[in-house]
Length: 235
Figure 1 (cartoon, one colour):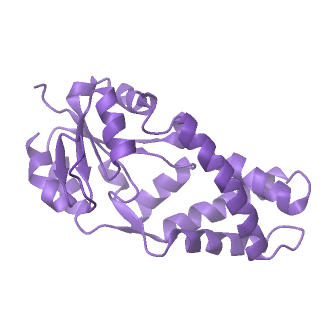
Figure 2 (cartoon, one colour):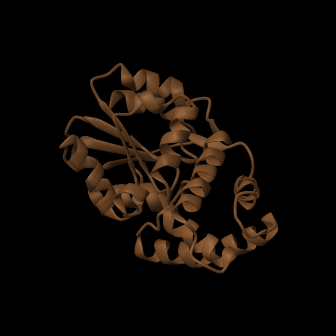
């Protein structure tokens, strides 16, 4: 077995979560966006437009393993709300509001930082591989919860254009460290995105989930990062 030279982590629901329900985070952002658009639109109307777009976009990106960046989502939303093409400055400000809302409501799981502190003492690279439509959201969440400094690389589907479980995003992350799959580990909460994708790529896989894991193909399975800590530190 090749020695592990890098450990990659999923972000959402692995290291961090939201302190309120996801739709409420979206509503909070849309309330602020409604205040800056030239044509009055109540937040509830913007939310309806958002949900309609989300249904179509989510199905497309899930089926094809490609990311639709936040710029495309936002232009689509504002175009329908305004009935015309939005100004670039409006799109940029609306994106800033979304990034801020996502970061503001992020909270770190209590066992995340102790594990990262332990791993950072080893001669091993640490990275993030995350499905997210905005690279800035991932970076700002990590910054807000105090974890950004632990990671050598943050790889997102927004930046790469490819979503987990497609091997492409994993291979791009490995390329950043000039490593082979057998020298790396992916840690995540999703059997489909993290375990299947990592397995297809040839990485060691660690599933961390409180859901039933009886049928998981992961190399290691744990109910928490605290439980996984000793194993990850010994790989």
